[in-house]
Amino acid sequence: MRRINIAIDGPSAAGKSTIAKRVAKELGYVHLDTGAMYRCIGLKCRLTAIDLDDEAMMKEMLSQTEIELTADGKVFLDGKDVSMDIRTEESSMWASNVSTRSVVRSDLVSRQQKMALAKGFVMDGRDIGTVVLKDAELKIFQTASVEARAKRRFLENQAKGMEADYEAIYRDIERRDYQDTHREHSPLSKAEDAILIDTSDLSIDEVTAKILKLAYEAMEQ
Ligand code: DC
Image (spheres, rainbow, N blue to C red):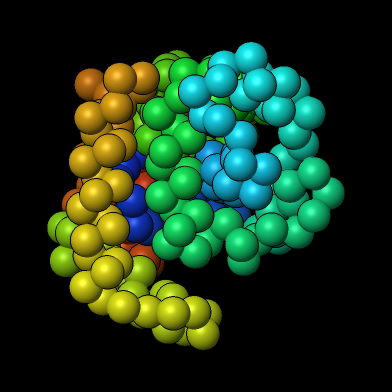
């Protein structure tokens, strides 16, 4: 069976990373959570108070930024473990803000494309099927209602011992949905050849099984 690349796109908190991780594990592939990369840049911009509109400074900052995603799900920014820091609601908004900047997008897209040359990647994000891996052998657009997504994020935060306010999470998801789908550069949209999966009423196991079936079919083509 040939090695393929799998693109999973969709709105915030649709469970893309959870599913992508599971699918990658089953296939012995590498999972790349591209949202974590935007979160790292958002965190760095917040901490350094850099002017997001200063393209030259942003370019310089990007050229000096190292992001490492480990196989066990840890995220390192310039050598520091930021796995928890990048997951707060404030960091989510910063990630969404920096992701509107073309200078950030082109830098991260090129890093992602270089990594995926080897094939055997399950990449999740917003623009994987439409921009990063236009030629991915399997493209999924994974979505769920705002209610289902807010409920999942609420339970997830609670389980992690993080602050959990359902109403605030719901509003934040709505705000990010708007920003991610209305931005000028690579707005979130379903690739024409992506398969739509609405996970509102599906379990993690059911979604994983669906995607694995599609993956094995794509590998055999
Ligand atoms: O998937 P996530 O919630 O961790 O992503 C954080 C933000 O990064 C999200 O609001 C949109 C942005 N993003 C993006 O623009 N393109 C990607 N490929 C991944 C994430």
